[in-house]
Amino acid sequence: MSAPAPDELVSVAIATYNMGQYLPVAVNSALSQSYAPIEVHIVDDGSTDNTRFIMRQWNKDPRVHTHAQANAGQARAKNQAWRLGRGRYVAFLDADDMWLPGKLERQMALFRRNPGLGVVYSEYECMDAQGQLIPKGPTPMRRGRVAGELLVQNFVPYSSGVARRECLESCGGFDESLGMGIDYDLWLRLSARYDFDFLEEPTVRYRIWEGQMSKNYRKRYQSAIRIMQNFLAEHRDSVSARQVRLAWAHTYAGRGDVTLWHEADRRAAFRDYLRALRYMPWFWPAWRSMARCLLTTRAPD
View 1 (spheres, rainbow, N blue to C red):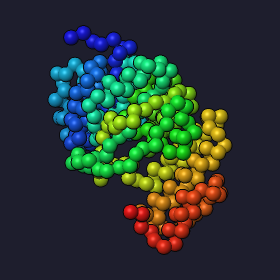
View 2 (view 1 turned 120 degrees about the vertical axis):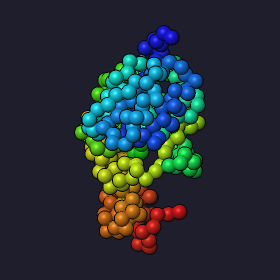
View 3 (view 1 turned 90 degrees about the vertical axis):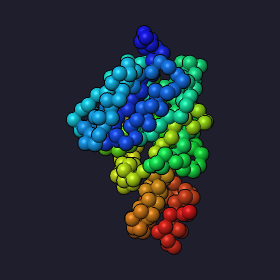
């Protein structure tokens, strides 16, 4: 079988660390896509579980390329995964997530219709550790130049994203100095220069389970604040003054909420609500949370 032309090829980038139990589901969801011109690059970031053994099952599949590195963190592994590919497009997939049938075919159709697109993403579904669906509300998605809206809230699910390789190369890929939020940082930098588009229907299932790094709420917000500061230092002209104020109000009110709900620290939460109101005095979510803070530290049902 001849190799597909690079102009048609999608490089699927998967970085994994101790995800042997979920990796086959992720990889096979990519290999079973109806869009045929794909290659899969798996980078094992120094796993200590059975990942090395698990990866052997694809040794004879010419579409799958496995790589190993000493543990260096998710950003380095993800950069390795997409840079090792040769496709014109890069599709990201976390090792504990899975794609739904038809994902790439529908996303590539959008790229063909709009040669100026930089990123295509989609709605997503949630599942638990066992793969059972978990209900979720709709994701507020935007298309076009989305930097201002994205600064307020990251609405681009990592494992749904497909980007043109030339756009990734121009933006430098993932920031390896960041411990968390590396996808948010990348989407922001791309959004300052390129158009985004989306599919309204879910194309990916995001797994929610106990081992996730994203459950470290305090560190997640610390990283988000640093990412926002870095973005505004470099791309301030990409967003309006109102969007900046709204973004900071949303961020500090959100950090106040998780501090209250997960640490029961009313004082720290109240300080963050006040920070939010200094940026936007009429920001209703902060006022509502302050009132709730006086009554309970429990998250709303």
